[in-house]
Amino acid sequence: MPKPIIEFRAVSYQLPNRRDILRNLDLEVNSGEILVLLGRSGSGKTTALKLVNRLLEISGGELRVEDRSVADWNAIELRRHIGYAIQEVGLFPHYTVDRNIGLVPSIQNWPKEKIQARVNELLQLVGLGPEIAVRYPHQLSGGQRQRVGVARALAADPPILLMDEPFGALDPLTRADLQREFLSLQKTLQKTVLFVTHDLHEALLLGTRIALLDEGRLVSIHSPEEFLNSSESLVRKYVEAFGTHDQVRGNK
Amino acid sequence: MNFWNFIVQNRLEIADLTLEHLWMVGISTLLAIAVGVPLGILITRRPALRKPVIATANIIQTIPSLALFGFLLPAPWIGDRAERLAILALMLYALLPMIRNTYEGIRGVDRATIEAARGMGLTDSQLLFKVELPLAASVILAGIRVALVISIGLATIAAAIGAGGLGELIFRGLAMVNNSVILAGAIPAALMALLADVLLGRIEHYFAPQRAA
Image (cartoon, rainbow over all chains, first blue to last red; front, side, top):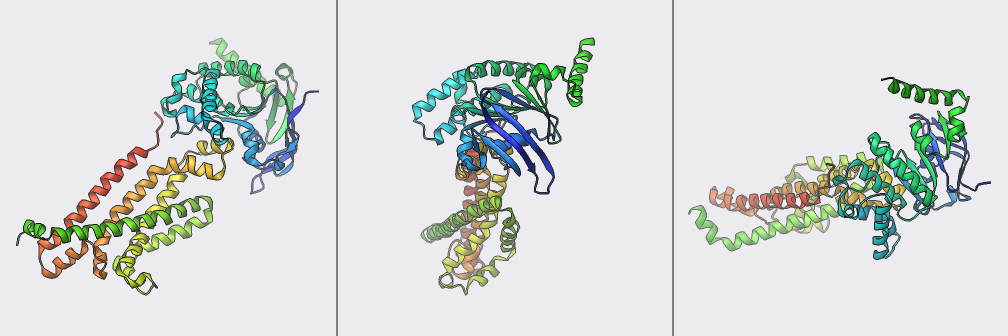
């Protein structure tokens, strides 16, 4: 049995106005896998992600990270243990790339030379040249910014990564590049990844397993092959929408 | 007696009054920063306090300056010296731009940047000092600039309660019906305001956040 690193046990999340965003979510993310949370806007997938690093607090159930309830973790310590990459990237506009990547190591008081070495290593890892280090975020292309975002999430070498559509805002070709590079990166890094997307193609490409969410509930968990062959009605809808889309383009 | 003769003959007094003016404005602005910036930060953390704090600063702003000097007169220690009174009044006037610009500056920081910072495990104070304040710096500086320019003008009225400064010459000139004397006070004050505006503008520009291309 693979070891679960993140465990959702009957987790629910409600807004202060009592609207349910997540209901009774049971889910395990195993060590070294990429678990994709797939669903449309409002399905609760981003909420589920933010519960893990306590940007949001669960309303019910239990959520465990490395066998410890998130409530027992110090929130700051928990977040530094988990890399976080989001679609908008959120690079610090007043910091150069190297300071952006080196921020978490620097607030953890790593020595300067070690941070410098780590930054260079990470830039190389995400396919950026060392000359990028001294640039400001506004001097980068969208793809470069996303790469820096991924490098920053990896900075302190966290064993867990949370990724919220990190390649969502890119043009299709750049996105495909980054997806491919991320996969090969993951082969060596073996992080435990919880990955949010609404793009079935991305889910099939990256996911070890795909968890389909709808209106705050877990519909199914499948491997990519199972997903394509599933008879589940909502899964079929996804696959059909995806297939039709491809056929339309194929007919042109 | 023409204007230039008056300036040359009274250059020492004018220099003295200019320094006095600068002192009142400088101290009151520093005090306004020391009070206004923390208040501005506080209302980003405690939204319930935002309305009462801004409203109070707004109301102060609407009190005519002579009346405000009068209101403060009975205050213990403050009321003993005209100069203290003037500094307090000028500080109160400078509060609104300080509070409002600090609040707006921090509120204006990109949500994604803040969320990424929190997600990375920055503590509240790291978030404030490493992300929010640096990114709000140019807006806060714009507030200081406005406060400073307003203060330099307002401080001339402080002479009416005997606090000194360049207003002395203006009031004296009014009493003497002598334009040269009025101008000897008004022109240095105007120059001071212009200079402050240009200087702070430069600093503000230096702190302007790097914008997306």
